[in-house]
Length: 244
Image (cartoon, rainbow, N blue to C red; front, side):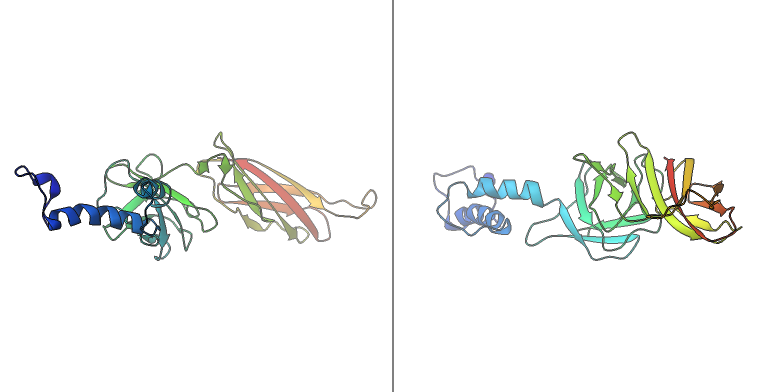
């Protein structure tokens, strides 16, 4: 293929040289989702479409080994360069250390923001986009606080991240008398489970007399808690934990 910018003699270009230039614009326009027409702004629109959409990839891999491909006809990364950023919606949550193979280049490790630490289970989930930035050697999992939308799960056993780095988690469970079952947290804290609160549930019930429902926080760790039912009958206990 003749490069148009290599030409340094003569006053004309050949049909082949001309078509090479036009074809490059045509491909960019059509791959951005447009049909060629008389609009003189189509190339600008193509660049805008690429800027807004081309960083999103689909995942066809498995947990911990994500295979990412560009959507539709958009072209993906052809080489990894420091500062490259992508986002994708994972097909499976990660179980621990993970890699990303972007556009068939090569599997590259995904690390936490320090660029050294492997991911914890649940760092990549399926109900929100995952953002990665290439630092020249590994993919960095970018903070999941994006555009003011804090990563969260609004389920009965859920969690929400805070902009100051704290993680709030909650849930409920029925506990038999005299027992203290192990309750796994929705997401493991990275560093510390600071405090746990608990209270028993008795919705729409008058429990002002004759009830001695006491839930004791029996143990806590970064990944689970234990609540002990000190009463002589079953009770459902709600719990709330704060950590980071």
